[in-house]
Structures are given as structure tokens and as C-alpha cells.
Image 1 (tube, each protein chain N blue to C red):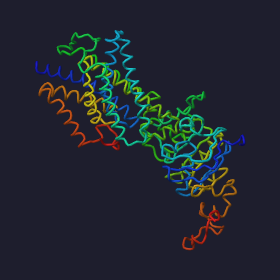
Image 2 (image 1 turned 30 degrees about the vertical axis):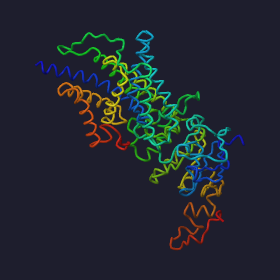
Image 3 (image 1 turned 90 degrees about the vertical axis):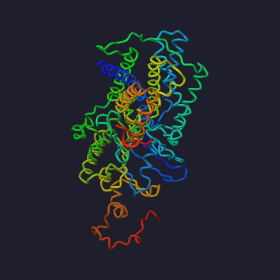
Image 4 (image 1 turned 30 degrees about the horizontal axis):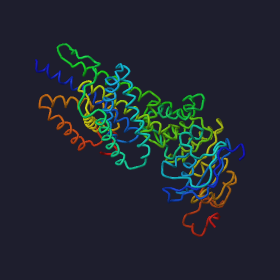
Length: 293
Length: 269
């Protein structure tokens, strides 16, 4: 009985971190869908979100409810600067060079953080409390539970906006056919900017949630790699894929981490990635003719 | 420029990839409220002309290197494609180019962006459904599952949503059955009559194009070689032979009798 209880606790924790993976994956998907750029700096933007919050809430002692929106806006600003300053100038270049630029961008952001805040991990000012939550007999960490709910709400809002908001239609239209989107009067470069701003803002938000749970460090961008696995398993251009694959990878990581030991986590995650690339290179829900990574 | 001219193209040259010249000093005008057709064989540069007018050339690494294009009294210079659409110039591209992943209704919603910043009342989708009742039945279905004819109707429907002053139509007959072509051209003529929108129609199917157009241009290898009111063009001997497939009044001829190298197009002299 207690074995089952423990299994449920582990699974719930897995779903919690899975929701964060989904949220981060959403940032990938949003940017890829609109601009066909795989932004490998999403993980580092997530880290920047954590540090922005740290600087605002701990450094400048701003109230948490001011610091959170400002940190998200900071992430969005990174997205806007990168899109306007770098990506738009590279329109028409080969996808691989744009991809490499985002890899470099990630290193620049890590360097910037180490330069300003040093390499030591830090903990964020606590705004969630730490009293555990019990669902019946099952124990759930309060922070993971809150993160799960926040991530779920944000993803739900995204899904609704995608479907019913006019801007969501513009984004999907641009993703389907750029020239046709232009011919309908859609401001395609504007859609690009918007996707980068919202995507990077989302990543920054995920960074704050992740920092609440495990603290922040310049290396936390590696979380973006797990999210990349999620995106590839779910399909690069599928929001639903990011959602489902995120929860799935979260569960697998929690199970392997608990029952086999933490060192097996990445083995399994990337094992799934390799398997996926062999069987369905375009992901579970991705469009079949999209570029293969 | 006369006040009743909606579009005038003067001596434009278009070069792709900085090397391949496609248009060599092409000129044409479209009078307000009229349907003008631009005919020519494959590769003559018809679609390129339309893309030059709607600024979509830049997406294909093409550029207008000489000449001017004036739309509604103002020159088109560095206008972005979407700002031109918002000025009232709508390009219905070749091959329909509907958003296949979106529903019919969402396709029309996408076209409402053409009205941004113009301060006009949004077009009711019923206008489109009035001309194309079949789209109404399928408005919640994915556009990719529509038949070819319905997709062409949707492409024209998107133009209607945009309340344009000029519609550029690139081969609306492409890949459609003769009955559908007749139906769609009937509606195109009706739209012109009822809304007064000007149209520049590119076609390979000369017969249907002449049926709706008031004026026609014929182009070959990047230049206009012949133009005139439709009535004059249809009676022109070369047009009859090379574009309408009729010879001087004796009815259809057997291909056996045609020695095509003997009969030269006059305008190529």
C-alpha cells in the first residue's frame, strides 16, 4: 500500500516538473511555428527570467507581484531585441546558420549572468510558501503543485488564444503560408516579433517557477535541453504535442530518477529522443513534411 | 495620370536573383471599375507582373530594377506587401494558396487584417457566403479538405473581405473543370458589376478571360506585344489563331495541315 502511495507521490512530482517542461516547450513551439527558427537559447532565456526575478525581488527588494511581471517583460524584451537585431537580418539565410546563432546567443547569455551574478547557485525569495499539500494521504510539494497549476493555466490560455483570438489566427496563417499571409494583409514581420516576445516571456516565466523549486544557477539553461527533447517527441510545430510530451517526459524522469537513480534520468530522456528520431522524426503530433533535425 | 486610372505600370523591369531578367519594360493600365486581362503563354512573366505590383516579389528574391508602378494615385516604392493590401490592393495568388490547416471561417478571419487601420466597417462574412453559398455549408471544416473549386472560391472570398479597390487575380481557372471555370468566372463578373471593384486578371484560358474582361493585354517574353478592347482583340487574326485556337473562319483545322513555322506571329517580326 505504501509502495503505491509512494509511486503516486513520485508520479505527481513528475507531472509537476512535466508541466514546467511543457511550458518551456511551448516557447520553442511558438517561435518555431511562426518563424521556422529553432531557438536553442530558450533554456538560457529561462535562466535569465530566474535571474531577472532575483535581481528585482532580492536585489532591489521589489514586492513579488511587481517583480514577476517585470521579469516576464524582461524575457520578452530579450526576445524582441534578438528578433529585431539578429534574426530578422538573417531572413533567407540557411536554417542551420540561424540555429547556430541561437546556440551562440545561449552562451552569451550564460556569460552575461556569470559576469554579473557569478557562478554560484542562488535561491530565489520564496513566494509560494513551503507547507506541504496533502491530497488525501498523498504528499505533494507545495511549490511543485503551484507550478503545475500555473503552467496548466498558462498553457490553457495559450490554447484558447491560438484557437479563438484573431492574432492566433494570424499566427497560424503565417505558419501555414507566409506569402499568402502577406497577401491577406497580415503584418508578417509583426507576427514574428510577437512570437519571439511571447515565447521568450513564457520561457522567463517558466524560469521563475523552476527557480522557486530548485534555485537558480547559470547552468539551469540545461533544462532547455530536456524541453528540446519534449518538443522533438511532441512535434516541433504542435502545441498539443508539447503539452503531452512534456508530461510524459516529466513522468519518465521522475520514475527513472527515483527507482533507478538520478544518473539514469538523462539516459532515458535522450534514449527516448533517439528512439523517436528513428521512428517518427517529425514527432507524435508534428507536421510530417517539416524539417528533420 | 488620369483620375479614373486605378493602376498604372510604366516600363518596369524585373530581375530575379540579380541575374535573370524576366520583365523588359512592361507597361499597362487598369481603369477604375474595369476588368483588364493579361494573357500570355507559360513563362511570359504574367505572374511576375502581378507580384511586382503587389510587392510579393521580394519574398522570391526578385526586384523591380526600373520603371514605376502607381496605385490609386500614389507610387508603390518601398511599401511592404501587407501595407499595400491595407491600401486596397488584394492579390489572389496563383494556386489558390488558402490556409489549409485553418477552417474556412478562419481563412476569412485572416483576411480581416487587410482592414486594419483603414477605419472601415468590418465586412460581414455573409457577403462572401452570398456569392459562394457552398462555403457557408463548409464554414467550420478545414479548408484543406475543400475541393479545388471551393478553394478558389475561398481565395476570392478572402479578397472580398478585404474590401479592395483592385483585385489581382492570378489564373483562377487553374486545375478546375470547365463547368467550375464557367461558374467562377460568372461570379467574378458579378462581383465586378455589383461592387465596382477593378480587376487585373491573368489567364491562360483566353476564351473565359475575354468573356469577362473589358480590355486585354497580350505579353510575350517580358513585354506587352498587343493590347486593345476585348472586342477588337477577339477579332484579331493572330489572337484568334494563337490564343483562341480558331483559324480564319474555316472552323477547326487539322493539326496535320498546320505548319507552325510557316505562320509567324506578326508582332514578333
